[in-house]
Length: 252
Image (cartoon, rainbow, N blue to C red; front, side):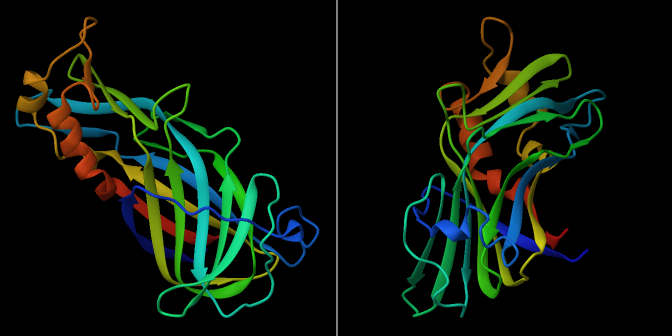
């Protein structure tokens, strides 16, 4: 298994694309490659101070994935037509440096990804969806998971406890997790994994015992960190949110 570490950013926009029918419905499946997108968590527990028992432990939550995108610079021309087809699409374009890009976008039907750490320290999430791509030697490749609020809930929710006090971190705005590879050799008939792992200890690093001790609680005694509650803590965590995202792209 080959593995390449990626960089991550959180952005506030996404790419709209379209695609040729044969590239998404399996009619050329023998010649296609496929990328499975996945979102995991790790390091649920963090000690926030020297005082014994002052730990923040994330226990459960969910993310709502809306879009999955793969964008790579390639020399593979003429394989994708610009034509709408259901929830997936492809697009080719030239960037400002004259480089030729191929893009595949997938709209997720049921994008709720549950997190249940349950004391294990990590959680391996289900495959969000598998996206077919044109086999090629890609350069400056990006894979993106767009988290988006939905009618049923926020874009991301993490629930846990600080000592015995319930804590909830709720993100009510769009987040794009973006991983970048210098090169990605994608072969026909092969399957690949685009994995994002949220290292929860890195997020907890920006909270202290004093922060949570002084935080406002709701009527049920829960410390809710959101855009409308404990906003200073929310802005701080959101500012550093990308730092907890660790990425890999690998052949299955």
